[in-house]
Length: 433
Image (cartoon, rainbow, N blue to C red):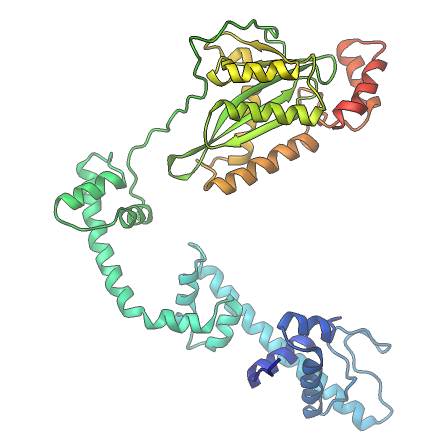
């Protein structure tokens, strides 16, 4: 492979990185820099020779018999003095460097109070280039010098664009005020285009967001329960009793929407065990077809090994009342149960579970952002819910109970059961799945 021609600046920085990293080896630093170990060693030895230090001179923070950070003892007093002077000079240079970086970061903290965007960092470098070297500013703020100079070259066009944005923002304010504060970016864009202004709706939205101009927007209510009037009547076998004497007997499920940016949604179907409230099955999709709830039930069957003899309770959504879902339940040996039409209380436990999910994952935000982020966030919460989160319904136990003895004590105090020994065997075989 052809040799690469490294600049003197690169070599000096590589040597400084090695010398200032306690405990680091040539191999470690060379791997980080993408260079050969022998090449780095040659640079370090050459630099030490130039400074009058021996090849084995101690680095800052290196362990030595004479004490951490101290040069190795030498029999020659003159050599010892030279080592100490070199060490003092190195420490002074390091102190000056740290002091400079501290001053830069202190000023940057005030400068970026409104947000640390890349453009703001370029502006900070430009505003402080007379006080500090551009190279040092870029290093401390972690920006590329070539990118900064490219940004600097575009200052003229940006100034023109900024003036145009100020004029357009004033027109947007007038249109928004004339509408009584009701118009959002789509209607404002339409007004501008009607007056002959050619403008992109994204630019209008950006300016409105920047200047805090917001239209009236009511939160869209998403209806996930749409009953099928032709579906057969299914009895309510739960009668609002969402408890179970043992795992694997009673399950409940529901669908909830997951809001995304731009007004779009994903949908989550879940299957919960009424005994421990563990989520044994779930499915996330961009639709609410029967496949959504069927996939969640199939996951529950795979998790438990089988669902034969279990009861599954849901609302009267068309997905749960479909022929395809009824056939799946029949194949799995599951008896269906449904609450009354239009009564959320008949499936209150699932409703509460979904409310907790969105409260703890959204944390006050309006949406999850993009679909990938939404899936990752919900998946992480569901797995933590099953393994770590404590539930008030279960006496603050986790769904994956830690021991049968703990469950036995809880059940005896809660239900007055004197001989729950049959339950203990079921816990090891089913609830630990």
